[in-house]
Length: 411
Image (cartoon, rainbow, N blue to C red; front, side, top):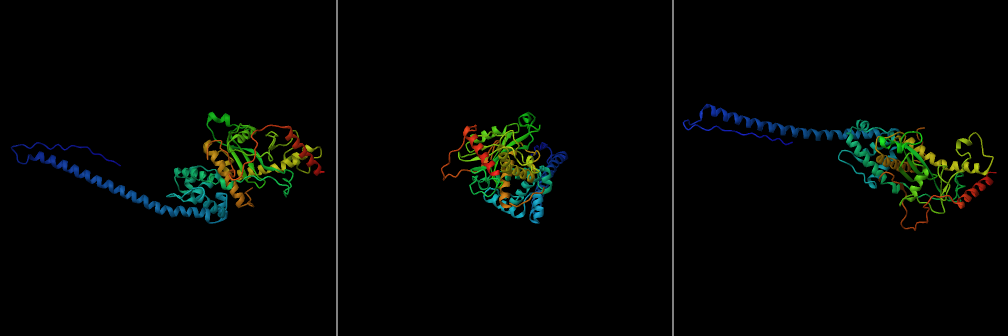
């Protein structure tokens, strides 16, 4: 604070006939001296107030630290039940994730907020889709602190993708899972899901899905063990799945499909080399095979039934993601770019919890359009990959032969 006081003391001219200048001159001099002393007294009082206010702030921080640590203790370290309800994971995985963010995610303690509190704030927002003002009241932090902590932790989570997003492994001839034993050479299952978002009025037409509200179309690849290997958020809800797939293949570090392998896709994609789709015009969804209504007519129904049983793993993965993280179920309070980062961070968290708690039962960087997948090993020569999406007679014959083999084994 800068205080400037500009004044001028006009001493009267002494009369040559008077040695003291008279009573009027003395009164003026004394008045100006009194003003100067009063000004000095005000400055001293101001500096005392500033010094006491500074000591009060430091003392409040010292007393508030213990209070905040008590909040974190009751929220995380008191019991697994409380930790799971508030942060959607138990204490042991939380402590391991905290250490990973510190060592590999470059997340550091700040003057007022430690790493575990930063992670707790972020997980609480992701798990319950709560506004910053509510979180600031719960954790006794300012809204600015909550916003900075959340964005910093989201980027730290994304830095863990090299550790948590793995390369897909093709299905081998000795596969024990009957759902996947028919699809030798298959890598993963691919599908898209719509995430509700909030956009500006001039962007609603682009992001509006077929249900009439703005969404983000997210393409994802998932292994039989429900581990995400590739995710591409950022596309508008009005974009077709086939268009997003072509974009993923055309990217420099995009989706890689070796010529000898393929992915399982639904009827929204074309049946072409590297992507095995079901037969159209036949029953496909698992609900249509309920109550013992087994296929008895032709090979295409048998193929569709077994294709749906295997590809259903991606639907299960989407269900667990949205059930655990409420920020994916309803529009969050962030822009499109930040929503893209949030989706990638939840995918990383999903893989972490799937590996750390495989038997967990739920309660019944980056710009818009960035993809995230396992990186190639520089020591191995990359195989020839598929770069275009197009139907071929050879791939149609491959699906027909596979359907005939399934029909023979079915009878």
